Length: 188
Image (tube, rainbow, N blue to C red; front, side):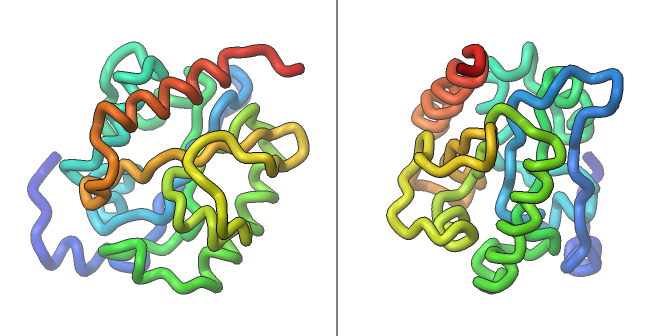
């Protein structure tokens, strides 16, 4: 990835990054990963989880979701694996805490509609605080949730941002692996 200047990053503020969803030739959506919102590097490049130091792509591979470590520019390959990516809030910011409560709640409504349309087996929200706000679940914890959306189950994962020092890469990999195993099981 070419080095981005401070001007490139500022110009990316408030941009959006398109969803990665399966096309007609792709397998059904097993897991839809939902970030909080695009960071400035993601908005500048057009790729989800693109900031150097973000652990999403390494953890996705280490947990067995992908056969090799994908680069952000290869995000479309996820659809061929039954995986997708979206965000709660569409607009790019330098930090997720720049989003308003109203933006997260509106994002939760949009996400419910997206899930109803694409019917993934699992919705994986990466970011516990944003999940709690968007879905009015103040006591939610990382892991599978009681609440689902129709036939779609919900799993909250730790935020893979390098700014989230509470979770090590190893601990994240364990949690993502738990989800991968659950997603591989047949629907009841």
